[in-house]
Length: 177
Image 1 (cartoon, rainbow, N blue to C red):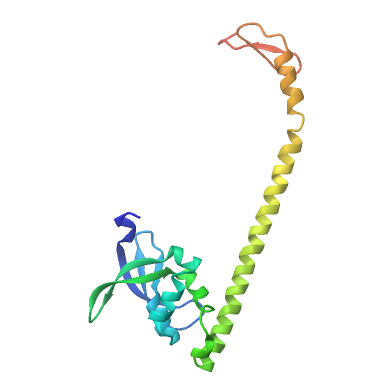
Image 2 (cartoon, rainbow, N blue to C red; image 1 turned 30 degrees about the horizontal axis):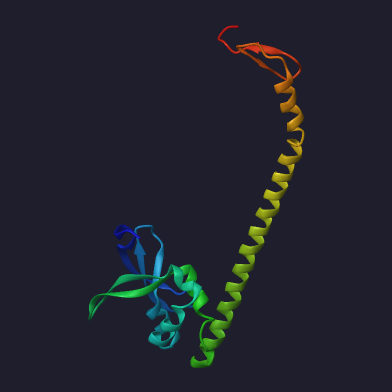
């Protein structure tokens, strides 16, 4: 990654997906918001150090970045961040017994919403896949006789400077002929 991609251009507050908690968001030059994972843990009421250590071994962490976060007391420090679209996956990666019953209900609802979105994305992907298969089938059946057509082109007697066209006609390839 080059330094330009890692440069934080803005830091604001944003609501966690499916929850009402406000957390910091770090925006890179590409405009996408990254959420500090420690802030998600703090909002959920779980220990960040313990969970981040576990989560770093998951496939989800492939897209995580260490970004400079500006704090009021400590100044800038590097913190682990995830894209905001990946944050809801963290909701199911810890023991819900660690949070209050009200938070469990919120997490349950958030998980249901995330599942609906994932299902919708899957259904959309399937529809596009079917449409692409149909378009490919149509194209291939239309071009099924291309070998015979090409055979006619190569079998037609061609004089220098001419190109055989379907139907036995030839045309001069030179200008005006």
